[in-house]
Image (tube, rainbow, N blue to C red; front, side):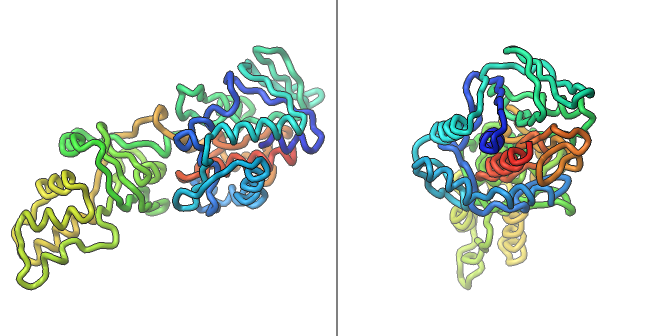
Length: 378
């Protein structure tokens, strides 16, 4: 996106990618259909040490503008849920679209090319880029190297190292939008139910920065995943708990509290099955049976269902994380242009920056918007 916008301005642009194929992370996104934006995007959908930083770029290039580009290339798409837009056919359509736009803007591309070093000639302020395909000089360098997530796709910490080389601060990184791993006790209680899912509200984070998400939870062979857990994981830090409401907006014991209603394990499990898969309902009852069948015990039974607290042993790490939280400190960058304040001509965009979106197309929209903003200036 940055290369396209800079090329349209008449800049001579060289796009260097160490991968053999352009847009590899785009190609695997959204199950191969690329969740390319979210129509509800706002700065509130992002984590950052500066929650206001993303506002400028997101206002300069909106989901509607990317949708217009998609429609210009006759790519059919659909809304899945919660404003998430996916290609009808394949993520290849998005990569092809971007490659065509680059070609039309006169952008030159070098694939399979490793960056060896980036230095700056203080005499004339130009940058010197040493690569496996030769040496280049440039007035502007834009770093769009992504984060540490999915190393098998070629992800590295190169962007962070480059930022630090030029004296920029980097906020500590961690896996985000990542499955959580049970502690041994919870593993023994739940992991034989791998594959079961339920709609929940998952909440994580401290009072200062806490968020809740109503989506699906999935039990895995090692812990918990699913959209609700991935979302909450971005707010979770080691040692903290994650809270789950397993029956959001419902009182499942209401039938048992009715006059002359049956009050026994069978009736309780039947009530649980209204919100949980059968085996999960049975397991929940086995682990949290009412002390007796009085109203107060049933009230406690109900409350436990809405306040399931898990303290994960950790996450599945960068290998399974969809994005990386943290990155180049936004205090080092101009919010309008993405240029480093200390180093004129040096820009950082996308995931390498300390701006991390929710699940559902938000991170792509940040990539397009930050790239567009840098491209108007670089």
